[in-house]
View (cartoon, rainbow, N blue to C red):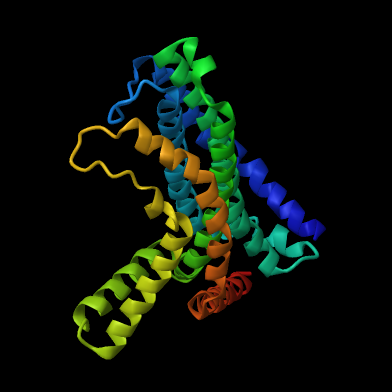
Length: 299
């Protein structure tokens, strides 16, 4: 366990500037844009919609950038130690190849997205408060229902973190398979695997094997989507052809959000009991075994 913690610390020391910039960059950028920003689409004299929308934009921006960056990093992790010629050093330590691969996979695939999202929620709350102050002045400090917004922030953040963790596990088979392809076939591995699967589904689209694979992939991606967005449909605001969302509809959704988030957390966790989810993790474990085998062969 000590070696595993050391390997996690290595990831932090090597990528900490990029990770910090990943969160601070968008937050500072949005803070700089606050004086020039204006929230449209909600016809309301209340500060809560402005604060919530600004916070959601912050979280969404950080989350998208985090997923893109971590996905890019994961594709190169399988051969990183060979490329920088540090594999002999790590292999000389009293640990396993599985730990040397598992630590960066855990860091980039799960810990960094979760940490970035949690910090983005806090940064979004700050930007939302400043945006509300910019739109309404000092009156926003007295008009805002801070207790409600605090509950919304806490439960929305918790729901997002749980959903993100479960979604990452649903997508693990894709990620580890692409990593294994990159390890064995170098830089062309991941594109070749993607093209091969897409070509198989296109050429044999009417064959039972291709249809079964398409359903399997669709259910796997659908599980990740459910983990992230389960319950969101109950909060959709009906505009009924209007250009703006009414104040009453917004506050109805706002007051229901903590309850919806609280109720859907157990449902998201129950998604992990599906045979599809378990089968995906087994497949990811097999691909991880291929990563370990390639690392042993590279010595």
